[in-house]
Image 1 (spheres, helix red, strand yellow):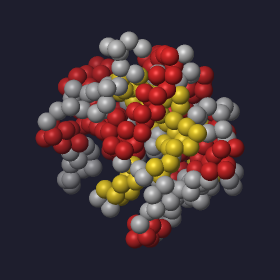
Image 2: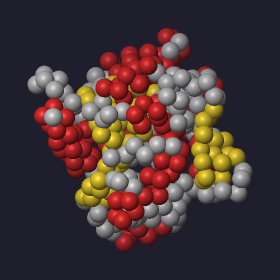
Image 3: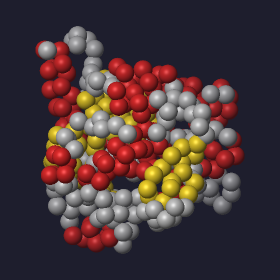
Length: 327
């Protein structure tokens, strides 16, 4: 790699975990491409998706805000959520702006590109597909639940998730970014409703499987009711492999810090518990395990520490690219 080219990172995910990670990564000299799920069907995003027939903007909005380099007030305005008794109630300004830009241009991807310029975004933000997709889950009892928000609320064990329609097309820019990546990061995020909806997009998951880049999976700190109740770290990886029919992860990053008991008790009310990293099983899967104190309590919610995680990932990236170019 020449001195004037930054290493390329592709981050795949959605939900609340991805923006947290990106806020840390953007502080390093790297080229970031964030690939974001378009399966959301709840809240403001779900309303906009249904009424305007465009991809849900919520996860994209959060990623744009995380990678933005603007005055704090501008970002706060973009993220502002209306609390009124009329049609605006529950909508964030950023969602409405993205919807308006999509309506004006007729293209969701172009709308994201234009908003990236306005917000001075450090990196590239791409939807997993330039269309809405519907996430379905086949449950252990054989029933099919359709819709991301309904899947979690069903509170049943998930056997498999899949997408519709059948003719979903990934963006050429997304496939190109994966091919050119030095490091591909999966997560953090809800396993079945944030991570897999990206990887299940036709050709996108295949590109990840066959990419020569090192792949790191950032394991969730806590299990999630309605998705991963009782899952260990290796259970998360196995679920990804079963859906992809491909074992492609090189490294898993897990938290080794004891979660405070009061925090555990609070999460227990939500049927969530710390994810146990089962080393023997992870080694059996051929994974390199990086364990560190990466948990952070933020407004009573447990999150990955963006600075610590970003530093670990950057160190992995630099070591890997050094090997690659010294070979």
